[in-house]
Length: 175
Image (cartoon, rainbow, N blue to C red; front, side):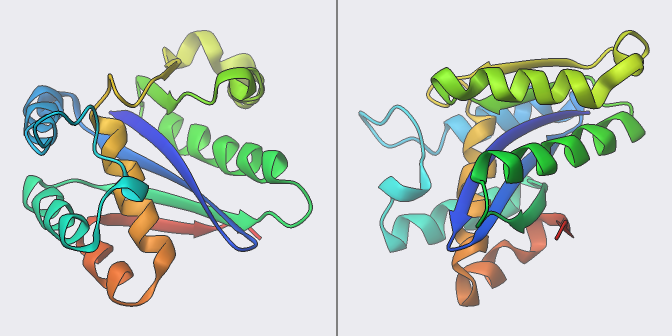
């Protein structure tokens, strides 16, 4: 099991999304998602797509069998703490299913917060878990686009959330 993680914020709610992919499906899904690129496009990104394109991409992701787990919490006090709270729960869930890799969309100078949070969450289990974790630029890792598109649309609510329903594995409310 591998997880590809992106985030979104809607008002006072912080959303961390993990596209969860089983190893045998990794290359197939990566190829399918990469096939969604338009000519000249480097990545599929929620904020850069118009309404019709979002609908198309969501429909295709559902056909591909994409699965996304969402962790949500209040972020009024501190967005970074909200992220850490969600990330700790995600790491625990990955360990429960013997996850092997965690890929986080890069946040440049804030990556250090993620690395510390993951190390803390792993604690004494780090060696036994065999969980590799890293940051990647979403332009280079198409599986990050799944988390981005699904959490962006889920966060909008209404018809957009309905369109993501078949892809949502779980939603954990942490507040």
